[in-house]
Length: 238
Ligand SMILES: C[S@@+](CC[C@H](N)C(=O)[O-])C[C@H]1O[C@@H](n2cnc3c(N)ncnc32)[C@H](O)[C@@H]1O
Image 1 (cartoon, rainbow, N blue to C red):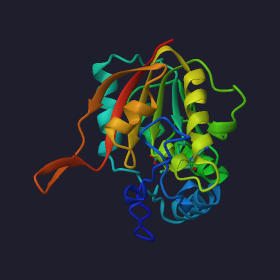
Image 2 (tube, rainbow, N blue to C red):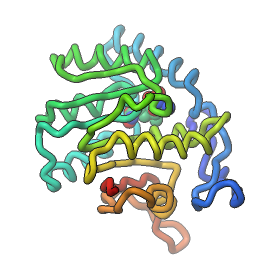
Image 3 (cartoon, rainbow, N blue to C red):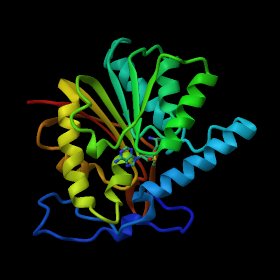
Image 4 (tube, rainbow, N blue to C red):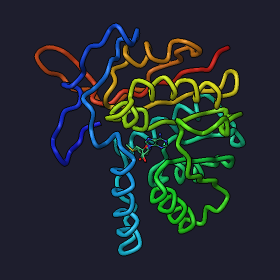
């Protein structure tokens, strides 16, 4: 996730700390994008903008980041009654798309109260009143998240990884909560701009099978090809 306000390329801040973390994905330089205050402030402003002019605000990684996951869900025959969790739902735009696609057992959580109010307001405006949105810290959910067929994360693991206080603990806790939240053979769809495919495969190796990478826009530079966003599907296995 790039902090566009300060033009910080977080990928260049990837530092090594092999003694404390066996994964190759080590820590990034901390950023305000890893703080609750940042998101509270951001979604408070988006809420005011939505109230004023009806603009839903930032769609992280663009519309394509939602349609590529929806296309995979269609191909994977995820049933319309599947229990789906959007981790760190933000403005709830993905919940809106999922509901419009026919999914009817939808839950979004976010630790920002302004995000939750914004997501609920947008869903209500769209007439989508059956979607559950809860104010909840994914890393401190006390076992309340269970039994999901699909967990979706678009930019939230990135944000957690940038936490200035305890990103290492946060990443470990994320994995634990995610494992508990998913049913056996449930799917995890993660979209990230901070982590490479290899780093995500490493991070989500234990308790998950890699299913597939979703195609994202790639770029070429210096004879090499790379992707600015990585989208992967995993399956929970016990
Ligand atoms: C980059 S935004 C992405 C929002 C949304 N998924 C999207 O794609 O538009 C990261 C989101 O993660 C939320 N978040 C970060 N840490 C969280 C945590 N520990 N528990 C719940 N939500 C969290 C933030 O409030 C923010 O809404």
